Each structure stands twice: as C-alpha cells, then as structure tokens.
Length: 404
View 1 (cartoon, rainbow, N blue to C red):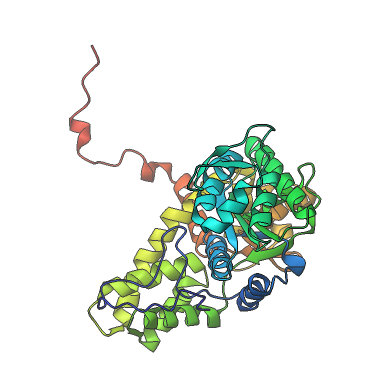
View 2: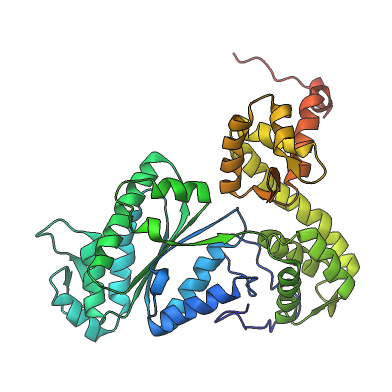
C-alpha cells in the first residue's frame, strides 16, 4: 500500500534507489496490513477510536513494526493530530516531558499558545514562547497531556513508543509512563497509544502492575508477507523509482526474500544498484543481489538474533535445524534429551519471539528466512573447531614483542 506522502517518484534519473533497507526508514510501498491502515485512517480522520485506544505491535526484527509506527504518525499528522514519538530507552518520561512536549508547545499557532499559557501548567514569555514549567506542584505527564488536549480543543494525541524491551529498569519506567497515559485517557481526552516490540517483551510489559488498560489492547502481529504482497512491493517500489523489473528478476527476488520485509528492501536495493542506469532491473541484477542480500541479512539480523538467545533456545533451534522442513516436537525433545514439557517452554518462548511458528499440532518450523541455514553453519563450525582455529594470515612470523 502506498500511504500518504509515499507517491513521490524519483526525479533524478535512476541513481537513487527507492528501496529503503535502513533502520526506521518507512518503505515507499507498505506490504500487507491494508485493512489495518485503512482503519487507522478512519480513526484519525473521524476520531472513531473504537478498539484502537491502545495498540501492541509485535513481530520479529525487520518485519515492519517501526515502519507501521511511521505510517501511523504520518496518517495522524495529516489529520491534524499531535504526535509524540520515542523509543522505550532509559529516560523516556524525561525526554517526553522536557523535550518533546516543549517542542510541540512552540510549534502550535500563537492562539493555541495563548490558551496554553492560561492553563498555568507552563510558563511563556511575552511572545508566548515556551520558557519553563511551573513548579508549584510535581509535574505529571497526565497533566501535560490533558492541558495539551484542552488547549487544542481535544484534537487528538497519538503516542508511539518503539523498541519495548524487558529489562527491569526499562519496564519499570515504561509501566509508569503507561500509567500516566491511562490516567489521561480516563480524563476523556482523545489519545491513541501504540507500543512496538518483540511479543515476549510486550508480554513482560503487560505483567507489570497497573497495566489493566494495556491488557485490553488491540494486538497486531507482523510476520512475513504473502508471495503476492512481496511481488507487489518489489514491482511498485521499482516503478516509483522510474524503472521496471523484468518478470524473471521479480520471480527470483520473491523467492530470495521469502516475504521478509527487511530482506525485500535490502535485496531490492542491491538489485537496483547493480545497473542503475538501465531502464529495467534484469535477472542478472537480481542474481547479483541474491548473494549480497542473504549475506547482509545474516550479518545484520540473523547472527544477532541467534547470539541474543539463551543457550537452551539455541539448542532448540539446533535440534530443529536437522530437519529439511517442519520439525516434530517429539523429535526435538529426543535430540535435546529432555522431557516434552521442558521443550514446550522453549517452543512458546521462540514462537513469542517470532523466530518459530506452529505448522500443525505437534510440529514447528522456522519463521525467519535463512535462520535454519545459519544454525546449521554454527553447528558445523562447532563440530570442526580445527577448521576455524589458527588460520594462516601471515602474522605468525611476526609475534608481538613482550611488554617491558
């Protein structure tokens, strides 16, 4: 789907790739979730919030969670909503109250600032520019949000929080932040809040105290795109850049990317850059992109995913990697030499993390493309330590001198 602001074609020839594999860069063509985006459009245009008061966006890395937040922000701002966007890193409350909201105060029209100054929450100078916060009482985020809403005639506030993580300190601050937002919602103002992260981390947030309103959130799960949606993203993005993609190149890239949104953007970018002056992306361009893209996603995503897992999670994936397709849970338990109940704990964890999915009762498969191949390579390297140790690189003849 080409959302608002995405219909800009390239006017500088074919040198600038329309594909966007960089972090936090919304794609020109958003694959899948068409109905969801249309619903959000209605929410922001008509204030028909319904079940979208609070939203939890989960999914594996690179599946489009951050891009969806970007789409929501653009839709909301186009409809006149105030937006507050940040990540869940330490100091979230301080950043929002002392940097983001003051910036918003100075961005609204003067008439709104005059109304804001009359609320007694913030101090303004003679030109009605924000100076400081009034300190008669302890500042609260809920008070800021309510005041913003009152001064803007309740025009709507969208709050977007990305990168939710399950560390104790961060979860404690996030729960405080969410509690303040819930109190502002209870005051009757138009607020939509969305949290994005891996499902296992979002579940930890819901387990915190005072999270009743978040437990009623709408949940949106980001997984791989369908082959049809993958083809659509590749084709329409290429056309927005002013070129076309040959059918055989398109077929190969659909197969290579396996519907993984980040890999679609990465492979498309490599294919575009293979011969940027040509009118079309050829099969040769797609073949050149295949090797680079798979190596790139392995370095930037898959390896880090695997390294972040616990030893038991890794053992589970290693037991799965033996199979060519779906894995039977009974076989995984046997290979790990543990009970089915024990194995099931890690099955649930890996499904919630987005790296594994249930195929049918008693069977699981990998969700992240090329993760199986990477796990196999790790196992093979561990079984042949001599193959990776002491590789000749010419430095054996130049030992470092002893420290004096």
